[in-house]
Length: 268
Image 1 (cartoon, helix red, strand yellow):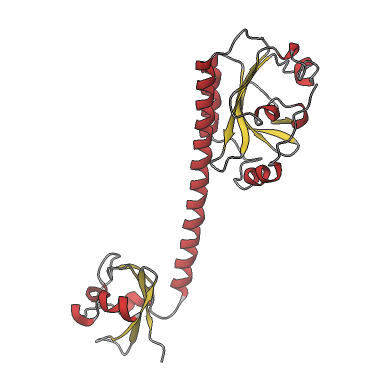
Image 2: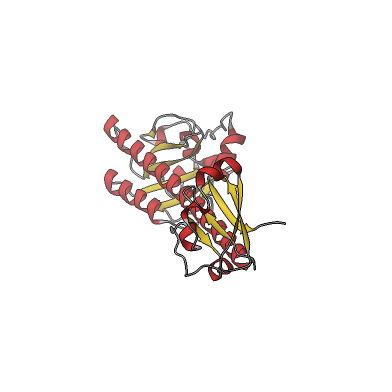
């Protein structure tokens, strides 16, 4: 048996893998669908979405195999991630790299293997979509290789979508915490977009408006002020403007903040 060597960029490859994060996570439908398609498409017992970690290969999705992971030292996928193209072994029992491999001489008694690398946009290959079976094959043609490569691209898409969902969840959580913090402020506070329309306001701000404002309403309407009370063009130049509310002894300041504005009590 010839164990797979580790690529020259191994520390960076592992950092890219661990940053996702995917290892040791629960089964997810997007990945399970890939192995189900692979099993049917290639009429083969086992299809896996494999992630190659430092000393193990872990299966994000699997069908036809009970194990969650195997040592990297005996893995076929450890060899596959070193290739740019689909890695194929037609009969592992006749291949010097695998003929005495415990996964060949014992369960699952691999004879045929094909693995398509999953390469991140950064260029690091983190794993494979692979198929394997106990019967050798005489060939695995270009069309089959292309279809397996497409499944690897589908796995990359699932990984990308998963990461975007996680980023969205983090952003939503941060926004919710920010809104909760602003609601806890006893002073009136509001956020405006670049057109002077309300995007957020706390209860204290709502209390000083003639009527409960809706997000999207212009500030001058919400506060019962004439349109000339302030202008976004003037604010774009000055960065701050104070307003005396007609119904309350409150002076609010409008501060430029990035692409929008913040309304808060004026600091004297």
